[in-house]
Amino acid sequence: MPDFLRGTVAAAKVTTQDVVHMPQIKLSAGVVEYDDTGGDGPVVVALHGVLMNSALWRDVVDRLRGECRCVVPTLPIGGHRHAMVDDADMSPVGVAELIVEFLDRLELRDVTLVGVDTGGALAQLLIARHPDRVARLGLVACDAFENFPPGLPGKVAVLSARMPGGINAALQPLRWRPLRRLPFTFGWMSQKPVPHDVMDSWLEPCQTNRAIRKDAARFLRAVDRRDLLAAARSFGSFHRPVLVVWAHDDRVMPADHGLRLAGMFPDSRLETVDNSGTLIPVDQPVVLAELIHDFIKQ
Image (tube, rainbow, N blue to C red; front, top):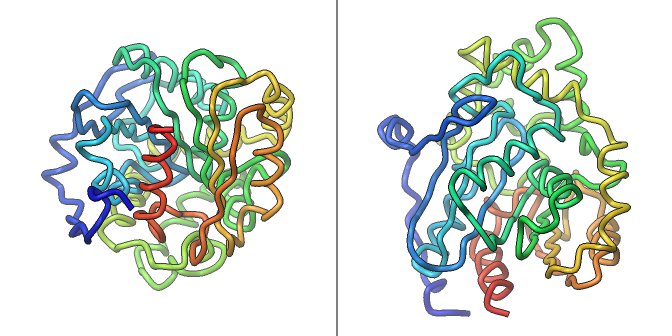
């Protein structure tokens, strides 16, 4: 293990002050906040899933800091604090295009794009349309093929979005923290409970802001497995290096999907992580940081 990965990094709480001082950029769809460690190292852009934000990646970023420049946008898919404009394309394809705009506006080139959960689906949609925008691709326990929306939690989220007031009705009870560990909420997403301060920051925007709930509902209602199946048909022509990381004990992302994904890219490798659910950045941040570090240095 590289020296920079050894030891334990103390997890800092997500505070209001941290959120207020996050850098932000105004894009065509609205204001997007992001974390950026800065530095001259290789650029890693990390994507999160629905009803999450950049804090999902904090323990991985803490371990890559100094070796890489880590840029983690908070995507407008439920955990964001600034509502998008009314006519923004909030479909998965539209959000993938927004990520391309984000990269262009920040002049991020030759990036290693890494996505977990639905962030991995967005990464697939992005490289299917803009294969030259990334130098390396990392797909970490993510939606793929027909598993879109993914597993029980994803299907419940999409069903809620299609019912009038459904997202609000589904999220307000999650103020009671034990409910967050149920299989159809976040319980199957990780083996370790997500720290309360992190999940509070994920859920608070949707729980308190109707416009944010509208953005999330627009995204979830537009989820269509046909988009990912179409994207997969282009993977054979993506000749950049690809790292696929899958959780051995994942209950949301089918075990064979990691192998299927790796087999579709000309230059790829598959790594399997033990003792983890879908949210490998929560369950095994040291292992994931090492895999990303080695992938970039290879």
